[in-house]
Image: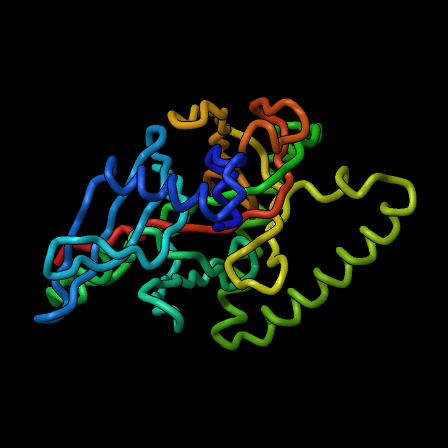
Length: 292
């Protein structure tokens, strides 16, 4: 079973035979795309939506008799918000015909790795020798559980100062990456001062009143992250098969906007615009390729 099936409303499907039955049903109802890779080899994608912009993608091969043979599947949620225009490179996974994207995103302070959700399009472009340059990426995270945190009170002046400081820090990180020693020294001093301030405040304050947002790797898999972000929009989606409610939350985390999907039953607290979401997510991304 894919661990994040419950994120799109399939929490009741735990046994292998139940999931096999579900996938057979989705294969019959889904939209099929076929890509001829070699003379005797093809790649077939079936996308079965269970709610608008949410469903299961199934991949496999169609034999000479027209019979589909399933190889792997994964749940997906699509987002329309542009998350990043940072430089993006795409590489194939070792195990199967899937891809990972890597963003040099200064706003989160790390190289952000995500599961490429439109890998079929990438493979098709590669086969047809079309442009594979990425213009921007729409990021979406699936969470098995999450919590709602209260927002931090900020004045307009504090919000503006934080925005300016973030912009300046991103410029320093970019300069440091290009070998600017003064920028490296400035960043080091800022980190020391920040550590000192946090050490003093954490003695008397709750950690979540100090940490406004968070985006950091979590676990051993490189595309899973622990995030804390402000909720800017909420959309409710109902799984047509199970009738389970799923929240599609739009988050603003470190000035980066992305979506998070989580089942209502797995979310602790009531989501509202302005409050914060905290949870571990499996990060997916749709790469928008440049036209030639």
